[in-house]
Length: 459
Image 1 (cartoon, rainbow, N blue to C red):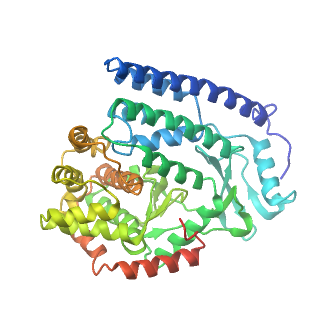
Image 2 (spheres, rainbow, N blue to C red):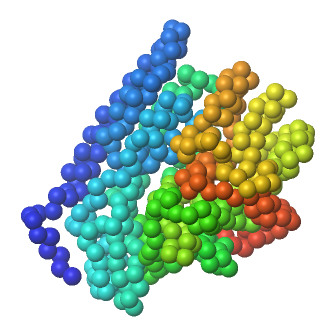
Image 3 (tube, one colour):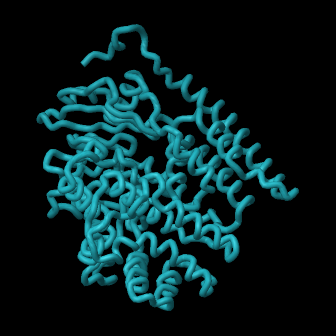
């Protein structure tokens, strides 16, 4: 493999220039978002509501020219109910997270820095053009010396400072929300998003997450997890087996039997790790799943994995039982166990509106869609609005940080079912997942699995 630039002139990738442009852009974005925040706060002070569609469009415009982590953050918070106002969520959801890949000079520098000057000799083949580019890095196809097809994920340069800068912008976005609407205190949300996003920069942690999921699904052939090639991986470089599959949305027009089979596998891919190990895949992006010819799924991208205390999982099961029996006291105990404070009867009833929406298909013992008559992009919006409206009267409420990715993943999974038009008996699937649930057994199982996979126990 030669280090000569590809035909067609010199490469357009100039890492130094890109970094300089990014620094200037951060300054511009910071000024734009800061101005929006100041105007919103001033409007509130003088009794004028500037918190509207125009403000949301201005925010999108301020962020729209910037690639990298801020795109990931923006799309992330757009899918978390009540993280930002509905107007903001609608605009942020339209931002594109994909960026043009960096060129061959960057790839050579990154590979040499991570694997040494003789890195090319460690592959039979390494494709110069990126197969995919995302917010934090890009993926190249390669072939191992033994012929194994590989996916090689390279992190972009200076991502730590980029993430820190973008999280400051997120803090300003959340401050707009708090100044204009105090129903939801978003500070715990901010802390949770920041922690998860910083974890995504650690490819050694992501590799451990892959090993964890490989352990969880070792006995379930329906779910495929990439194999980590540790000898070709570092903290900023992750090499794994390449899993062939088609996009999930390609199967929307298949016969119902096929769509239901895919949906049932997706249900297992989410609820099995959570109910048995206290773990969820927190990124519901449709690009993180592909479908194999046998209609099993490939589960991709393990940067955003959330490990929960066993007591939190127990609360999820306990709340289900409370809703099943209309037991308000039992529901209150579950909410208190999660960290909700100052629970009144009215607040419990309000929280139950959202809980009944999330649990609705699992409480209904019949074959059904996850939400009749709802389009994927609208899933959960009406219920979140109703809860938020009531919380304005009862709040402020500080949702425990564990709810950020729990809710986000639940909404994402529901949207997958709606995209597929699947009809399943979710009640039976869920009850099979939580059958004989035991907190102590989960704690023991979780600790052993995390230790075996090398995931930090404090995650």
